[in-house]
Amino acid sequence: MNILTIPLRNTRKKWVKTLLLLVVFTLGVTSIVSLNYVSSVVGESLEKKLTAYGANILVMPKSEKLTVSYGGFSMGDMLLGVTDLSESEVATQVASIELAERIAVIAPKLIAMTQVNDTAVGVVGVRWDKEKILKGYWALNGDYPTTKSGVVVGSKAAARLDLSPGETLDLGGKVVNVTGVLLPTGSDDDSVIFADMDFAQANFGTPDRVNFVEVAALCAGCPIEDIVQQIQKALPNTEIQALQSIVKQRMYSVNFVKQLILTVSVIILFIACCMVGVTMLSSVNERIKEIGLMRSLGFSRKGIFGIFCFEAMLIGIVAGLIGYLSGYALSLKVLEILDMAEGATLTFNGGDLALTCLFIVCVSVLSAFFPAWKASSIEPSEALISL
Amino acid sequence: MLEAKNITKTFHSEGVETRALADVDLTVNRGEFVSIVGRSGSGKTTFLNILSTLLAPNSGEILYNGEDVTTFSAARLNQLRQKDFSVVFQFHYLLPYLSARENVLLPYMKGLAPVSKEAKLRADACLERVGLSGKGSKIPGHLSGGEQQRVAIARALVKESTVLFADEPTGNLDKGTGDSVMELLADLKNDGLSIVMVTHDTEYANRADRVIQMADGHVI
Image (cartoon, rainbow over all chains, first blue to last red; front, side, top):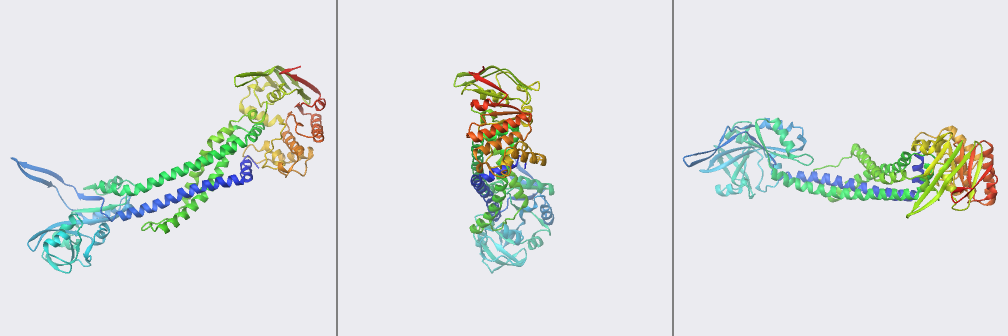
C-alpha cells in the first residue's frame, strides 16, 4: 500500500470508464501500428518492383571532356583519359559498402561497334542474370540466351539487319544465334545487339573489363546521396552518377504512401491523446474533493501530479502492449488480404514492441500533463470548504 | 500552543468585498477543547480553515509552538498537515474506492514507500477506538453516515497529531450518532489532544472547555 494504490484502485473502481478509454487508445495504437507496418512492407515491395524499371546509379570511368574547335571548325567533344573498369573490382567494392543491403542489382556493360552484313551496329555485353532483373520491363519475341553464343537483338536493329529469332549472324568473326528480338522499348535498347558479357569481352574487349556499370539501389530509408557517397569512397577512381529523376520518381511513389500513412497516424494519435486528456480532465473535476482532502492530509503537489500521471501511464502501457500486438496481427491479415507483400516480409521485433510501448506511455503521460498539473494546483480550501 | 493574532480575511467576489474576519484573536492550550459557535456567515468556518492552514489570512499571525505558520513554505505546511494538524470535515470525504482501513491509512500513503506495519496497527487501533473494529475491510458505500464520519475521525486520529480541527462534525448525523461522536471527541481531549470545533449546536458546544461566540467576523 502506497501512493500508487490510489490510482490503481480508482481505475479498478471506475472500470467501465477505464475500459472505454483503454479501448479507444488501444484502437488508436492498433491502427497506427498496422498502418505503419502495412505501409512499410508495401513500400518495400513497391520499391523492389520499381527496381525492375531500370538503374538509378551509374558507375563510369573518370574522364575529361574537351570541346575542340579551330578556325571556326568544330571538332566536337573529345573525351580524354577514358579508361575502362574492372568488372570484378566494381562488383566487389559496391557489394562491400555499408548500405550494401540496399543494392538490388549490379549490371556491368561493355559497348562495342561492329559490322553485320556491312551494316554498323552496336553490341552491348551484359550479364543476363543481372540484366533480366534490371530490365524487368523487357518483352521478347523468342527467349533469353542460355549459351554464351546467344544474342538478343533490339527491335530497330533486327529490322535493319533483317533478323528474327532462330537465325544466326556473324558477330566479330563468330557465329551467334539470335534467341530473341526485343519488342520496341522506345529507348536505345532498340538499336543494339545484346550479347553475353564473356563473349563480348573475348571478342570486342579485354576479359574483366567493362565500360560502365549500372546499379539499382533501393532508396527507402536512406537517401541516394549516401549510397553514391559510399560507392564513391569504395571506388575512388570512378565517376558515380545518381540518376536523380529516376530516384525521385521512385521515391515519390514510396514516400507518398508513407507520408499519407504518417498523416493518418498523427491524426489518430492526436485524437487518442485528446481522449486521454479530456478523460483525465473530467476525472480531475470529478475528484476535486478527493484532491482537496489529500492536500489537507499533507499530500504534496508532486504527489497529486504523480497520481494522475500514473493513471495515464497505466493506460499507456496496456494500450501500447495490446495495441502493438493487435496491430501486428492486423498487418499480417491485411497484407494477406491485399496480397501486396511480394518480395517483402513482416517480422516480429521485440525492440519495436518495447519502443512502441515506451512511446505510447510518453504520449499518454504528456496528454495527462495539463489535467495532472491542474489537479496539483488545487488548494484544499478551494476544493473542500464552503465559506 | 496555538495562538491566532489579529486575523483578518476579506473575500472578493464579482467586485464585491466581504470582510469575513476582522482582527480575531484566539489562544488554544495543549489538551484544551474549544468550540466556536455563531450564526451562519459569522466567520466561524473561515476562522477554523485559517487556523488549520487550509486557508491563508489577509493579515495576522497563527503561532504554533511559537512559529508563525502563515510564513511557512508549501513543503513545511505539508509537513504540518501531515504530522501536527488533523481536520474532520462536516462531510467525511472518504475515498469511495478504498476500504475503511485504507481510508484511515491515507495520510501514510503519500509516497512510494509502503505503509509501515506500525501504521497499520495504529489504524486498526483507531478503528477500534471509534467503534468500527471488524469493519475495516468495508468500502464507505457499505457503511452508514455515522460510521463514515467515524472513519473520518479515525483518519484524523491515526497521525497522532496534536491539534484536531472539527468543522460541524455532527452536522450530518442524527442525534444518537452525533452524541457518540461528541463522546469520542471528549475522550480524545482527555487523552491530551487539543480540539477546536465549529458547531451551530449549542448543546454540543457547551461540552467543550471553552465556547467562543462569533458574529460578523468578530469574537464577542
